[in-house]
Length: 81
Image (tube, rainbow, N blue to C red; front, side):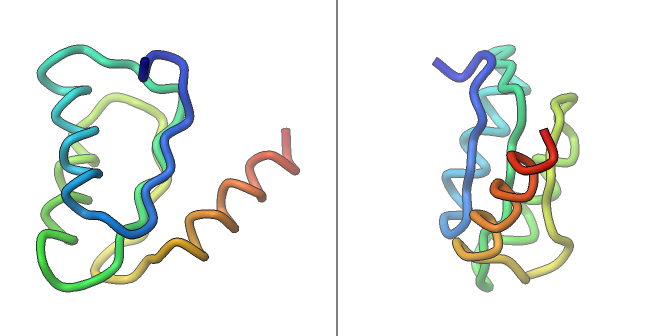
């Protein structure tokens, strides 16, 4: 289901980590991962795991992020296409 999909994560660092594991361990190939969870628990770690993935991705460093930033990023990508 992930192959060729756009994955948008704006609030759940564990969901981002799971997507990254699908890419690393099960060869899932989304077209784009926008990974911008926010918070303190597992946020930096999930973004670091995504950085190891060989898929197109957009993320923010550190603990910054959130659903609003993730959606704004997706809108910007769609407008530029």
